[in-house]
Length: 391
Image 1 (cartoon, helix red, strand yellow):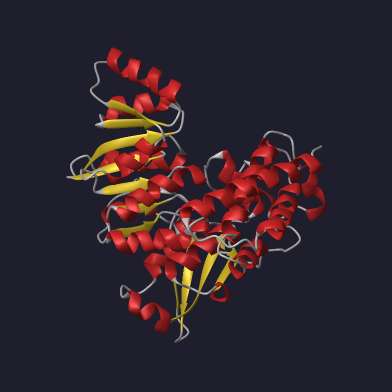
Image 2 (image 1 turned 60 degrees about the horizontal axis):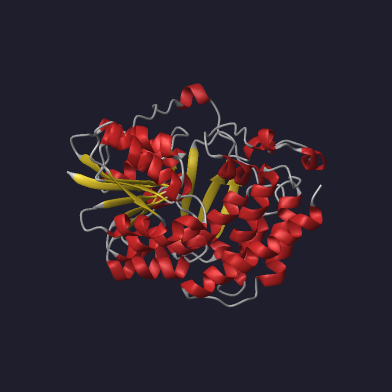
């Protein structure tokens, strides 16, 4: 039995992970579940999977959860705070850690899992975007296994040769595919009036609100370019992005001999999750089978810079000092939340990101403390830009 800790169990990735584990109860058991403040959903998960620990960042929510678990006679122990998330991530009883807490809030616990030699299933973009060099060094120091859970990065991993030493010699470039989100064909001049409801209506994927907006702006792809740079040691100029509206080809690798190897599958996050859990083998994920005859066609196109200006910011950040990617990520989190709160226009998200990157992107920061300080500075700068651009 492999023991699994899920950080971010109440989010879409966490719930999909539990869907897969439910199919393989004879091979996996849940050791710990962690979330930020969704105690009702976490209660339901604890009653079904009986983890040893449940962790909530919010102390009041944790008290309510603990009381409810006692009323149901459950033995799950409730822990509180970010340090507790790191504690269960590094616990010796844990074999596999799903790091799926959204945002910079998930960084500390993901790093704890990396340092402790776990198999880390990484769905937290910020671990690599904010602290890519630190995180990859932590994985090397810990001696664990890193398996990306983003469908694009999982597809790249599945399309690369097994020997990492051959990546630099045999691979010409990698291509991340993007659905194009809900505004792929929308006139760029109309995007200023987009509502949060429209931006969150993704045509292919069921995701949380923040990542849905990132998909609509293609900032998710910008962040994935940064992730791919760290995960695969690939220079930015050899990382490309193509829009593929069907979301069937999840990404591809082009080799020096002219071959291109791609991973295809239905748009279902349970597939990369099952791959990460079972690696190096395969197991059922619950996803539907791919029927190419029914799909009929696969389309690809270059991203429109006028419609998706934020994509270029990833390449700009990678050319700057060590803290630029952290700045970009922090600014984007603030801008997206302001948009979701109705305080900022959709196209102003890019304006905030670009202005904050220009102002703070040259600040050098490579140690975790300096990166977190820069993250905080970027959030303050973004908040000022939001206020200046507010409707």
